[in-house]
Image (cartoon, rainbow, N blue to C red):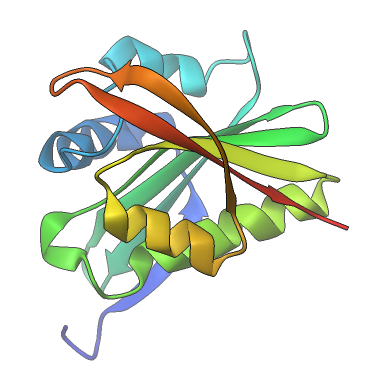
Length: 158
C-alpha cells in the first residue's frame, strides 16, 4: 500500500451503495442483497441499521474496501452482512470493522451481538471466535447457492 494512503472507518451513506454491491459480488460468502435492500438500510422506515465502511483513502480519492451492516433488536444486535474486497483481505480490515461495530453496539447499550455464518467460512468463524463469539446453534440449509448450514454465533457483554 502506498504510504500516503490510509485506512479509515466511517458511517456509510447512500452514495456508497454501488461500492457495497460491487464488494459483496466479489465475496462468495457475503449475504447477497439487492439494491433495494441496501437502500432500505439507509431508510428511516423499518429497523434502524448501522452501515460502516472501511476505505483506503489517499490525497485525491477514496475507495471502499469493506463494509459491515447490522441492526439493533432492543438490547441484542445482529450482524447482517460483512465483506472485504478480495485484494484487501488478510490485512486486518475485517477485524477493524468488527471491532468498530462491537464498540458501537456496546456504547449503545447492547447486551449481546449475534450472527449467522456459512459453516464452510472458516476464516470468518475464526475471526468471530477470536472476538469471544461462541457457537450457539445451527440453521439447517439456511444458505442457498450453494445450499449450506449456517452456524449461529453470539457474544454476551457483562
